[in-house]
Image 1 (cartoon, rainbow, N blue to C red):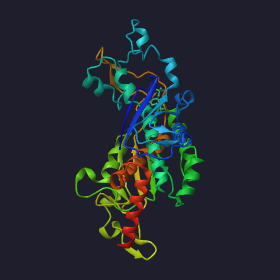
Image 2: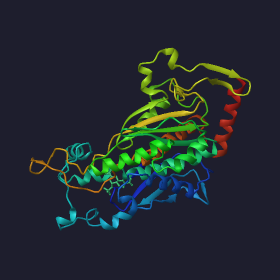
Image 3: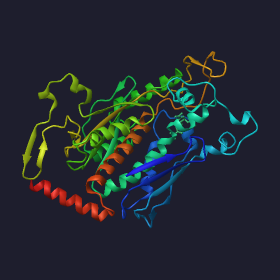
Image 4: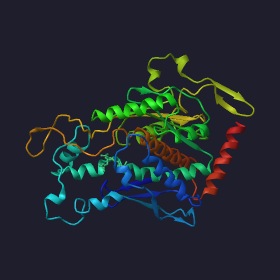
Length: 386
Ligand code: EPS
């Protein structure tokens, strides 16, 4: 499966096309829109989210609530566009003021590199597309992929583990309880003490005119053993997930299971012992690998963490250089999110879900959901008999 997105942050809409979804998958627009709503929430978001009310308008590939096997096309309208019609006009605009040309690149954003690369004297032509607004389209695509996961009995959850200085205690819950508790938290955190401290920290950082990042974790359960493959570098599923996570705006690192701790622990403390029982078949006594060995899933829960850097649009000035005057300048105040980590955990859930759905299609691929389920069940029986 693959998807492409198009559209600018303040343009009329975001557009996505998904190719390769099998037929007969039930698509609930309520469930898809629920993912979009979840992405809009979270303590630390700026004023833009009060303007938007994201919803996916599906305009191809779904009929009477089910996929047909045709490409799925969808759009997410930008309500804010009505305030930007001349700035974002497709037709040339005479009035220079109306273009709201940007010539002051923000450190940490795509502004300067993009302008040099695409030879753009107006940084708006870079920032509009590099903006994290695009994640609304990606969440919509992930939400469609989740409909396939749902049909295969696979569950997805996310949580925020850290915002700046505040780290949450690890709380072990079933995946359903985790989903329920994080949905009720304004920062998507399971630890109530850390939750309050995270919100206080976001307020403090915001008052300082600064921004803050954090760490989020995605957990997926019900994934069969053997998705992905060791036989070729670009078929390793953990590598594909890493690529997807790093492609989320502002994400700077990924780890699986015990992650970077594997660099200082001993082999005996890192690898998961193998066990067998009649009911469960082969399983691991622990899940330090985060559900992957040899570029394949082990059948244990998938545990992926991503680190998000602080958003580069700051009230607090950082040194930069005007592309017209070549003089240093002090940044002016712009509307921005001071912390988008809770929203980013929703984005990460959906991009990882996409990769799992894609790997499922590669292994069990058929043209209809029935064919996939038959292949999946036959394979599960084969594994059980092994
Ligand atoms: C973003 C800047 C802000 C965020 C935006 C991402 O938008 P604006 O420039 O309109 O104030 O609100 O995020 C979204 C619009 C969204 O839907 O998540 C940026 O520069 O990346």
